[in-house]
Length: 152
Image 1: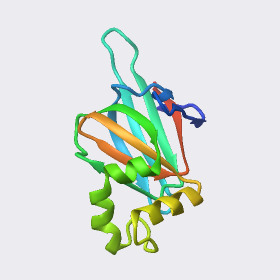
Image 2: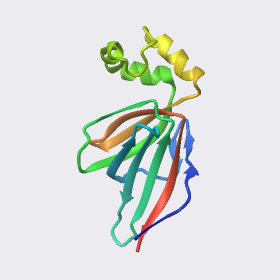
Image 3: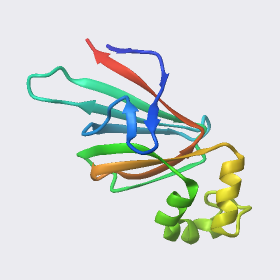
Image 4: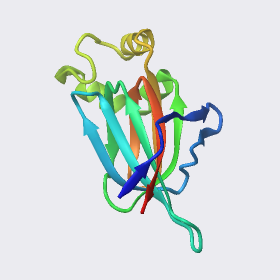
């Protein structure tokens, strides 16, 4: 049976990425999206020879939108970072422009600067989820938290 710690706020240094919890080289074992609750959970596992397995869940809350490339096993995280909306929108410009006429992520924006301003006004954050293997993308959400899991 799984035992869970309480959800805690992640600590992300803008220049160095996620500090707590450490997720570098964690395998992504599952991705769960609840559209009605606006949550996205990445379940991860870290394994090292002769070390105890660590399992960490990352929960993004208040999710407006997300996009991941190459969702397949094995997916290994490099890091989760804060991005400015300008950086995120520039990196993924092709995707936002391609999807804007389909109401993604917001129907009311015609230009990327307009979208950037609206996202900032809503108090959202841009999280860049970097994969060293496969899963790679971003989440636009209010916050990200973590909890540790142990298995009996």
